[in-house]
Image (cartoon, rainbow, N blue to C red; front, side):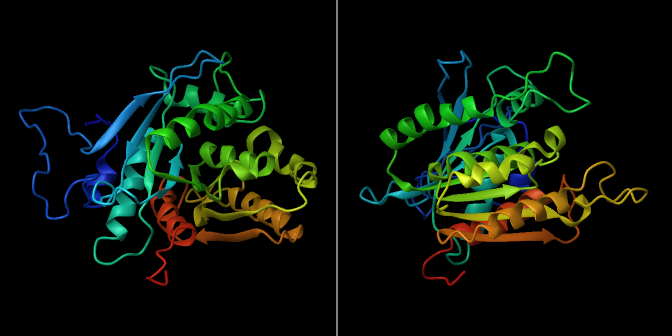
Length: 309
């Protein structure tokens, strides 16, 4: 089982090859093919899983925990990550790396949610992760936006049943992971169908989209919920604050301020079932914060029961 990837430098830097379901002593672990062939993420699976309603071809990428084959009765939490072209390798490797010396996080099945097959990443992200058709000013004139609710239903009606039929999962332990537009999508799911996931890792959500549409409409969406049962971890980088003239920081949008505003909206409802942590991660900007945010989010959302993490 192999998957060719184009964005694996981070996984390599983490020093953790993703090997799912093989014996812990390393006997019989497949090797890279060599002879100039592409590096591959070994021990993973790819399955075509189209959205028949919208006529869009997608795939899911799957990485199983190291203990999966050795424990045929055990079921596992499932972590679903958007932007799978980079997020899948990153998240899988971080999870394994943290458990390298001693258990820090619970073992989990990783599911990467691909872009549309054959589509440029930004075209797929604009369409599937955004809440309205009013796109960013730098988007092409013919770009599609605003199909996040349709994409949400694809995940719920197609991806979840497939994963839960084919793998030993804990359906009540689904974790959403997204960064940037992916974080915006996760925030919208949290506001509209919070029970889809038990945990949400929202990294640098693009709340600026369409004049802060999601923040402006969040109060009405929250009014629909007497309670909101979820564990939520939000993070944003220090340099995602708006400080014009200092080019370490954002020059057009205040993502730190938006993150604080969204967090305040959630806390103001005093939901008994909501467990929430938000952090501004020092020294990070929009392009560097994801690995650190993923690490801290996993420690918060999936701590190993025995480690005290």
